[in-house]
Length: 66
Image (tube, rainbow, N blue to C red):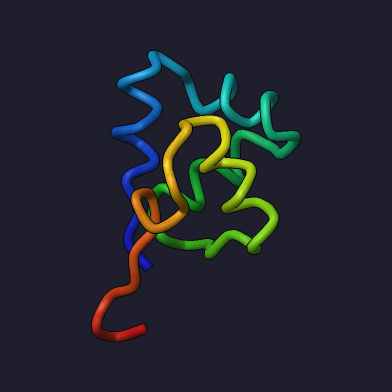
């Protein structure tokens, strides 16, 4: 799964730690999502999309291999 989380954070000038605190996860979780090592749950994806005021599909997208 691809995502634009790092770009979205940069636009809002959020660090990984900032975003982690806002949505209630660890900074390591944000890092793992950004690098593609972790696929967020539906609830977590919805929380992230709410922070950035974009649909889940604007932030997360499937790859051919998914």
